[in-house]
Length: 491
Ligand SMILES: Cc1cc2nc3c(=O)[nH]c(=O)nc-3n(C[C@H](O)[C@H](O)[C@H](O)COP(=O)(O)OP(=O)(O)OC[C@H]3O[C@@H](n4cnc5c(N)ncnc54)[C@H](O)[C@@H]3O)c2cc1C
Image (cartoon, rainbow, N blue to C red; front, side):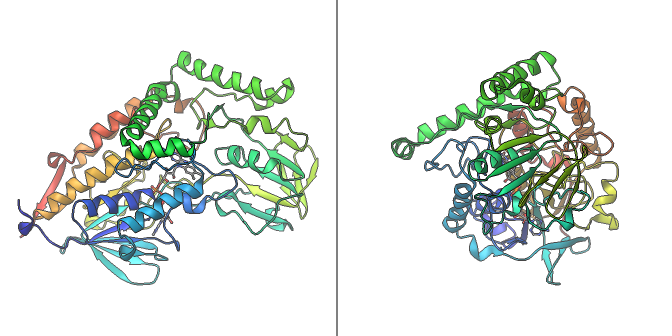
């Protein structure tokens, strides 16, 4: 159909200006669609990479893969680029694709309601306005809101206290006594980065994690020039990194003890190479199957504990006082600052804000037995609403962006349908149900049910991760198949 027959100004609202929102906007522009607005509650774009600026913050999937396939960048200075470089990449893309005029910064969407008669979404912003959109692409992220620990006395602490995702760069850590609470993905980056600088570092660990070598390296100027001159080399690097992660995928996601044992051996060898003290090694050795919780990657985290100024504390925390941290055994560590490396409140189990679909049904009601969506993107009864990185789309073994990109293509397919005259597309309930029965059946063969983690909902079900290879998800998700949807036509 020629573009003259298309609905010219289908208003599209994108919520969130992280990789997902920016990636969607770029693909829309590439398809000649400019009728979109990106709502971002913060004062700049970037999402994860705007907020996580703590020392050592970097991606843990190699940059040639952890970047948009339609915007490859030969200029990454390291195999695993630091946060500031990733944020710089996103900022450059915003300028290159002239996205600034589409951006509404400092504007949060706080409510959404589907108006069936007009086939539009009415979005309420925190400024009190109501915005109308035919299509909504929700890219609000899953790891956005810091999870703050509920520790007795935390509010009475008289020193400096901040979360890794809200790093206080005005506070000088040099020569200070610091407590780091948490030993997850952010802690493994921050601990080695500040260990050299602080006078004393106490790392409070609840559960040790499996750590594998990162094998980070610098891309020399020569290498970068080569990637610039011969884009095929960059594509080849991405291809190899991506397929390597897929190859190792089953070791990370399957409940296959023999494969897990391979991963555990690799990690244990790394631990032995980095930590000589057997007592310390024991404290750092995980007691759950490889892959059950997030695998951490680091070349120097474990080695940090060999430093005389770094202490691993495994005794649980009892309380925080005005000037220190007290553990259950009564010992007190006096600290000047506390870093909360306590991760994020995972926002997958519920709607990010009240969302009301057809027949006045709330998304939280549709999700009362757990968050489900068709291919993680669409929920029956919520027409023209697309979730990026929704339920069961997180990877345990490779780049999130591979999934996000497939979802963006699906959304474009739906938009194409709407531009050709459909009023709305609403995923069929039977299709959505069948898909999710399949997902949960496969879940039983995955490693994640063998221990407790933030991947699991309160009832023990997993609505966070995709149980399989990324490549398989991409093939399933990228294509918008009208047969899966109820399509309402105009008139
Ligand atoms: C420290 C850290 C390291 C990571 N490293 C990797 C990695 O190496 N590889 C990997 O694959 N993944 C990694 N991730 C996961 C990472 O979150 C994703 O890869 C990706 O950045 C997510 O992009 P997003 O756009 O979906 O979400 P986000 O980047 O979280 O962006 C969401 C945006 O939506 C905005 N927003 C939220 N709610 C609203 C609202 N109601 N109204 C308006 N705006 C709103 C937020 O302010 C934010 O800017 C990492 C995550 C963290 C926290």
